[in-house]
Amino acid sequence: MYDQSKQTPKRLLGAVRQHFPRTHALAAGAASFALALTMFMSTPEVEAKRLPLEVNLSSTTAVEATAGTAATHHAAAPEAEETLRAHTLKVKQGDTLSDLFERAGVSAAEMYQLLASGKEARQLAKLAPGEELTFRTDDQGALKSLELHRDRLNLEEFSRGDSGDFKYALHQRKADSYTAYRHAKIDSSLFVAGSDAGLSGNLIMEMADVFSSDIDFALDIRKGDSFSVMYEEEFLEGEKIGNGPIQAVSFTNHGKTFSAVRYVDVHGDANYYTPDGKSMRKAFIRTPVDFARISSGYNPHRLHPIFKTRRPHNGTDYAAPTGTPVYATADGRVIKSGYSKANGNYIFLQHGEHYVTRYLHLSKRRVKTGQRVKQRQVIGNVGSTGYATGPHLHYEFLVNGHHRNPATIVRKLPKAKSVPASEMARFQAQTQPLLAQLENYERPALAQRDDNSDNNTVN
Image 1 (cartoon, rainbow, N blue to C red):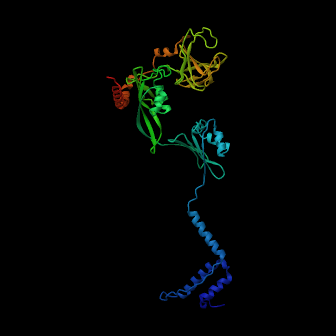
Image 2 (image 1 turned 135 degrees about the vertical axis):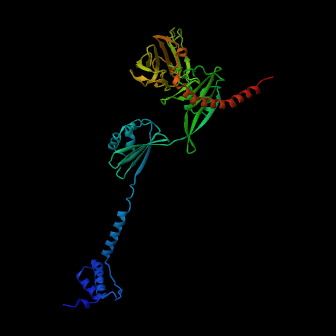
Image 3 (image 1 turned 180 degrees about the horizontal axis):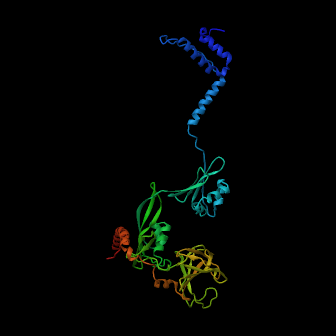
């Protein structure tokens, strides 16, 4: 037995080291030091003494302490973001969704899971050439998100949530719109004049469509005709990205001026009307082919070019390159879509009870018997099948089973519905500012034209 009170702190520490592993030296030493201080502090009046205490930590303990500290900091820090691989593909003609998934290196199972996630995802099966898909996958190749860039303003996103299901989101940007105006006089063709004035091909076609019930652009256009058009140009971040619809337009043909203005009705449907609210759209458009040349008109006593006999030509022939789109001239139903030795590929449409239109010598038929079609829907393409000497469309118009001249019959047919009386105040409030703006644009152009005419006058 020994007197513990006479042991010095240094001796106590040595005793502790003999009975404990070196890895626990720090904890044991601290305990011994606390015990020694207690023995020296017998009364409050005695001042506590600070004794230097050397403790050597083994390398194992240092590593454990470092690891413990690191673990503590790791637990407090946020988890690192997962690194994803992005792969962007542009949709090409003939591409299917499965083709694009395969090129992106994403499994078909992932595609089927995405398509099953909702009606928006099922629309991915209807991709258009030029659209872009961005696949984002993890290190294992699992699909984390898919972005569909319809255009620069619309992005559809399908992202995988924590539950593993895909969520849909639509991101839209708004373009800045500015009013643009163009005026041109026709010297050779509408397309050349429009292009020279700075109009895109789509805008020229849209303008022709507006007046398609009143003007036959294959037959009626004359040198000296003119047009004025006001439309929207769209910009994104200072860069032009496209054109909006025509707002107001006038076309002078054979000295007669036709005017049209765009109106969005109470149901959100947009159509073109005359300034007094009559529809620009007749039951039938004048021609089933844009900018084609009439190679043979309606002639009941024509000499047939192949058989050299007198055979009636019961329609109008429009010469155009093979593949040119052919439109339905009115809403209707396909009553025949087939092939015969004489007609080649042909389509017959029924329009109500009294009217039938026929389209012959097509290179392709794009509708089937029994199908419903809308006015200006593409139903086929120009060709030279059957008894044809070259690529053209033979177009016939029948009223109650009797052939009529397609170039003149549509002028006698009624137009579509006009603006109802209940909407006339709304129509005028929306369209009169557009017509006034078009008129203000036209005045300098008309004044310049008059000046040019005066300068050319011979005294």
